[in-house]
Length: 380
Image (cartoon, rainbow, N blue to C red; front, side):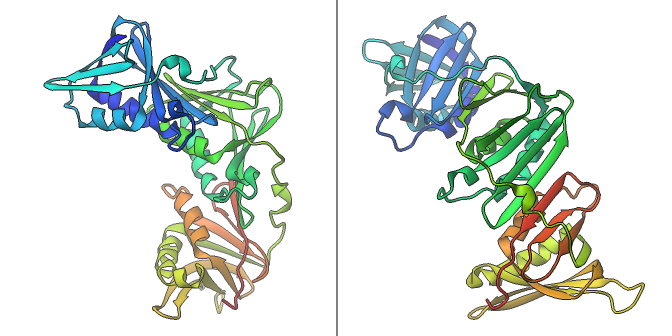
């Protein structure tokens, strides 16, 4: 193999695919990135056997070939090179790649490409999703997935295709985020899958701002999801199991409803979080309806630490219903308030039935995003 590429393109591609490299593996080749020529391109790929990322960059190919190189070593070297042409030459006898860039001359020992796992190839496209919509739906749900794998199904995002209706949902046992949308390209058959959140986060990270569509393939013969963005393909194993019936978790009634600025409430929550850390992140919200007609109510956000002090923030709100005091994990409120779109209208609706019932948050001007958070004990 003898190929020439630009340093900046090679560095960007390596940074992208290296996120799928298995850092600790009994198979040394999984710690490597695969380089393979393809006509006038160099394709780079990495996998941890659960997720793979593959992308192509323009190249001048003088001799075709393939090799795997240690991902970390190669990535660090390329990022340290000057921004100019990089020449890669493989010595097949020693499985060593000579890397030349300007006055720099390096040699990296690799492993034969034949040792690298065969990666899934994207086949028939089931649907094409608007890139910005897909990024938004991931952003609105990924934070609610479970961090622990005691219930593996909760470490993924539930995705339901039903005609032109698309639903994303995530839950960790303490909160639930649901995002819905209508899509222009309907899915032929109703399909429910749960995609690992790591793959979804990488997908959102990879999608460029100027991309318009992301192609999706869900092969019926394999438990896989494959996403194609330009010359990049992400494939991931689907999670096995049944996702909880989240529709039953969403409260159907409330005793108090509030309309408040998400920006103001987020600021108050961030200040309270500084002190609530010492109290298992438990913070109190005191809901005070207006004393008389024509006035506005208040939401008082309180974070306390027995050792470091406390913080009390008052946020104006339009409140209907009963006065109440509830406690939530303040981190959970910060997560959802940070994810909400506030560019057009920062107003959100918060609904609650009392201290022992879940709270519901949703944008005031749209009905495609809902968030449910379980309460904490007021005795904390």
